[in-house]
Length: 441
Image 1 (cartoon, rainbow, N blue to C red):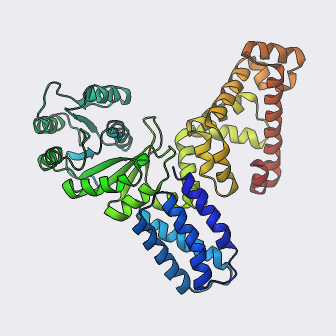
Image 2 (cartoon, rainbow, N blue to C red; image 1 turned 45 degrees about the vertical axis):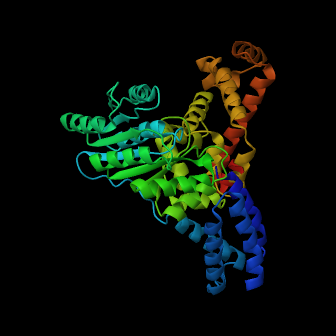
Image 3 (cartoon, rainbow, N blue to C red; image 1 turned 180 degrees about the vertical axis):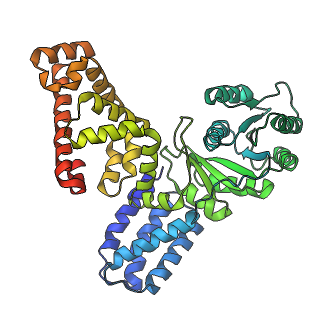
């Protein structure tokens, strides 16, 4: 989502890095490009203006650090101000009471139902006992959708089909939760416009009946500037405690996320980063600011790896790699586990510098196609061939190509990639971490 903003800021930073001395004139000129980048990314005009003014004041008043170039110093100030603008601290859910109620609100189609399921799954993993409550009595099949999602996630769903009184559903859901020891209720409410007074009054009545500890606005990141007015309207009517941004993996310009937090003062708590039920991330302003500014997110990358990789298997493979004993079975297993981390382009975006920028040129469809081809080729080999690739002569390669539906040159190309990986592993064995730049080309 932040690709456009990140790219424009990177261009502006090229001029900033070249500053030999900070003055009011050259700082204003350089920051003008940053301001334009923010505005083009859909950041609210007042938010962008105030942001640049704060950066300028701090840049001109900052003590010069001899070991840091003046342009780098301004970039550091921009990073710190961006973190502050996004929320300065990671704001998690504040759940208290038994049961705790969470109200999911927003427009039609913003992703409330899916986000309710994702949040339920996340809380279940944290040791809580969530109950999804179907409180949308207006949209056809809304209750069935939540029921289906609950079955996929193995989470209980309270549904009262045919009932049109939302307050009665809320009352019954609370009683059901207490009787079944469910300590967190997630209410999937109906979509509504912030200017629809009747439906907003209904939402306020649900709030008063359930006394939620969290009222989360689920906002589509693709909405743009309108998202700010939506957030203001809901906050005024029902008092928001947090925001969930959905479709963050899309091609929205990203300014709405920055603007909503700045205008309403309500913290962003989660980001929806995909369609899968586990594609909900805790929002961390420091890490997001680093990614926007092209500094990567190594902590996020490590967390993804920890969630995707089997620790014992990874340790065994690491030992074999460092001894130069990596075979095709190990290689395929590594690729499969890396695939669990998400699309390769998203993984590369978390890396700093040029590697992160390279992610923009990768087509996820090409990556998926190449992986399936590699998997088919390796699966067409015998166990002996996978464990001892040296025996792959011309006739064996022809058989593997035919069995996997590929050409012999595809098999040869895969074996060449495997040999290069083995060489890189041997380089790491000799040089340690100094060999990492070579590993990434």
